[in-house]
Length: 116
Length: 111
Picture (cartoon, chains in turn blue, yellow):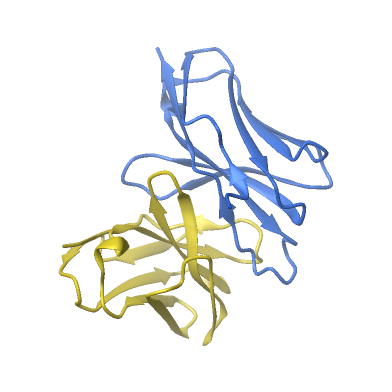
């Protein structure tokens, strides 16, 4: 049972345009969400996170939106750059900072390609 | 970048042999994790540690064991490797169970 799903295996975007990556979850106990970027042959790199008490968090070109009622989050990258081409994973954790020990459940990943 | 190293970075082994992967951190973080990455599955948690000698199972722990005898090192052992354990293994660390920072990974091939 996939508790975190990224339904788009890939996304292709033109440089300068907006990239929107989507993620859905089913476990209502998740209260902390993260996005990671991964280049080939490297470990995932933390991008941005959001707590369930917020519906938006912004860091430079990256914005994460959380819709708790729909159990949906999205990552917006504006403007997209060729260097953003990578695999993007969303991840979720229940009770961050509490008794869950920070265990993350990951989506399958979305391959983003930004064309010059 | 968080100070995390993994060794070896690549390993090829044969079915039935024992394998130990090492994760070493210089950040003095309390929490450490082992994940495996496979196509179509994202990353899945194998085991985690919440302190020296304190470990617990994750989602896909069968066939794996771990040990943490000191803060900086977290070892993952495959007692008898099988072809289904061919994967890329990532170690992660966290100071306070929110954001995790990942190592560079170990690519393991079991023939």
